Image (cartoon, rainbow, N blue to C red):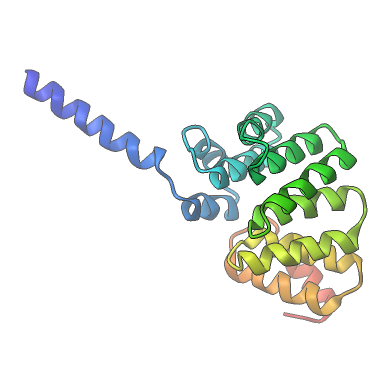
Length: 200
């Protein structure tokens, strides 16, 4: 009887551990396919700031703003010298519709983490809210250079470049987005824009 109990316990542990240890690539696949519930849940037990950030983004997609804020607060609780602190504070500011505060915090994140794609991505989001599309497009462009496989960095870069009338870069980023995230909920929208631009 005891042997059986241990086996069941071990089996339960084996079932839980893979879920707790989801990699960034796995969570991104879920996010890219519109599986926001699963992507949001991945942040619950993760210590990886990139997974936490993506979980917050997924919660926002679900309009679970309290859950998004909790994920971002974990990032904002990191030391001031850590760029993730600025990313978290910027994301929280955006939830509160504080574009200026979001841009300021994201700028600090970029200054502290110049090789971190998420710092530029968050800066792009903040600058988009402030309607600084030239700045936003440059920030998203840098995010795609630092992390070429990040679908949504390409998506937002495409949107930003469309606002500054850079058709070539809009088409390039949107085509890359569709290649990386073929099941993305935004696929019809992006295909429609590409068709309008005369690109495939």
